[in-house]
Image (cartoon, rainbow, N blue to C red; front, side, top):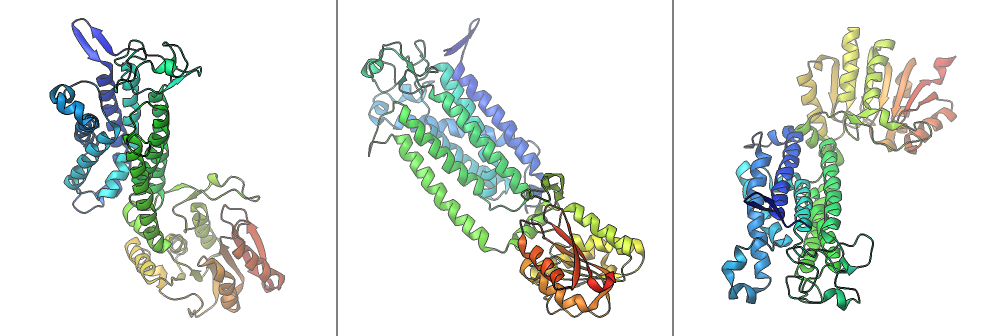
Length: 488
């Protein structure tokens, strides 16, 4: 190993070099996360961020983490510390992971308040960068051979550190264990588990997982704190398991201090994660999505529904959210309107209003007609009306806050688009069918083979001789139907 780099008269500790590298790389990761969340952050009242806040945060949290790691390490052995406090405080070696976590965490709380970012959101953003920084820092432990490696092993990838800061021969660990390799029946030059390498790969894996969670939170609503609490759980589990192959003193119940701290991290993360997720899912899905749209806007993304026999490649389609029809289906709605030239369109299930606006665009292109759309949820209906008013298409839209099964419509319906609650789609068609133009069209969304409720309702209506059905192979499925009498 290479504890020091000698550049002429200059001696550079490799551990310190890797810690500096860890801070720099994690600062870039954090800045990338801030940049991709810029619209979300700027929607926060009083937000005081700036373009380089990631580097500022890592600088402050890094220094606080190093101080915390040093203090936690020296206080793990209070007798030794008080016997020679200054030497241990200012030694270049000996940093405890959990102390670094506590120091960095306190600094992040202060920075979140300073930047006026909600704490849980702030911690979500910082979690992937924290994992990356920790992973790179562990390479510093490996290069310096500072005693963070594991117990002896005969595995092919076992490593020895005869020239490390804490060598693997003789008295080789910071707590005075001697002849450890011989204790395991192996020669003094035996290899040991390269625990820092294990941690490097594990923490990078955790970072990638948390980053992907952040990507999903940008595409759709997620509970604030979910990423950070997963960080507590996953890093706690990883460190708890790694300690079984590390030679560290054990305190109570046969656990090392790091394992006890890891158990607390796992427990706290699990309890808090269950709590926020239960609160999050207690809110209606429609309201969660609307709040996300209010912050992020309409984000076009690949469709994520599972493949079906009729649509084996859903990723070729696009979506805005999990409840609005596919983007291509929205375009299809506009094309249908401009093609069949309806005087009256009825839509059930307004939700965010994107489908209504596409229909209205078609009506505007035609120069005549109107769309009547209904939404049962008052909050959702109010948000849709605000969108319609701001769109400049309000004159083509009659938006109502009422149930589709109670809504009264005057006149002949040339196009009926059913996209409300799946269990009542069949009832809606039956209710409006007498008013539907025999030569008009009926569309029913969410009719794929994976979402059988709507599909079966449409086929039942066909079996009764009321409509003729064509099933379009979109990811979520779309019924295109016509009254049977229109085919005579």
